[in-house]
Image (cartoon, rainbow, N blue to C red; front, side):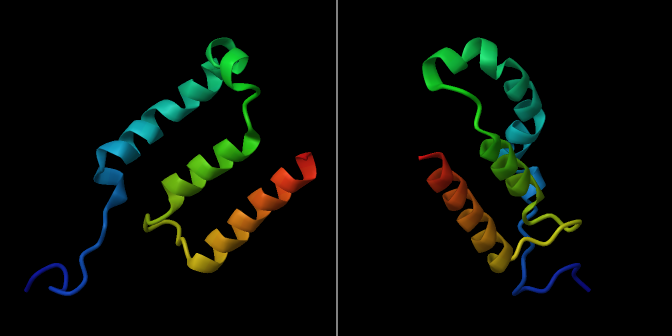
Length: 85
């Protein structure tokens, strides 16, 4: 008997090169941002960290990423941007 149904194929995002690259390097990127990138791109925006961690959590079995939560989070980001303008 096969492990999965012929209809359902789990994504396994942790196996993609992009996911692994982000997961392996983001913390270091955050540590060196001010020194290497702030002058050209401005201050490190805290919502970037939130987006990255949501991306890393989305689709894995230990967390569930559903449209409602994603929509709510996207609205939170829009609200933060509006409050800074």
